[in-house]
Image 1 (cartoon, rainbow, N blue to C red):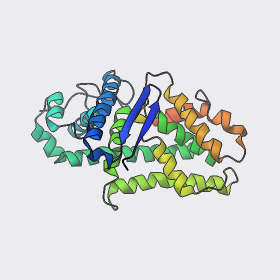
Image 2: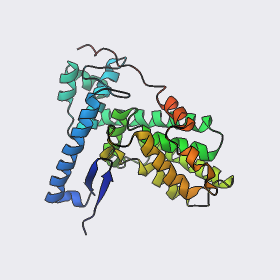
Image 3: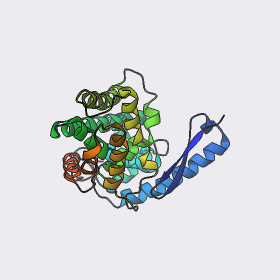
Length: 284
């Protein structure tokens, strides 16, 4: 039986098909329509710049950083299969040979994107955990961050999330899979700590950790940065949904889920600390 699901977002519905259904002509057509629709929204939002975005002629502090930045935005807008060395080189005004010199293949460039993204998220998760005193507050911080990434560091977040199924096919011992396990391990530890402290109900922490990690991975298909709900407001809903099902005592939930509260302000400060202003394009 062919299977699919629909995601109803802040600004409409997006239909995605699973791998079995993708084999059919109908699904291939619907998938193209989805990618065109989402790509149009993503392209428009990225073109305006903003936190975590890269301008048309922007570059990082070095040649390889500049290439990775532009490649990342192209993947965010068009997906991996729709991104080419030719387009990246043309935008930067460099030769394709320079890209090959730095990264070798497109697959290696995608891997660099993946690793950089996960290392950044892990470092921020560790800072969030160290910033708050209780497992409940720590988990709330991570949940808020998961949605705030849709506007802070948006290029990398959408590029990563668009290709998350491709990353799942990596070898079990690959660096990318190790990093994803490390991030999920942070969630697992918080759930265990919250349960041991009597803050959370006893649950299957392995399943809950995966559910929490996966819950934000499709946000790129429906979240609209300029939609009727802000990222902080959507994050508040995720916190309310998740912690509402975990907390033994829910009295603190309004404070933890407040999109204008101190907790969200602290999380934003942490995840924007590493943002840098793009510099000039690399040499040809």
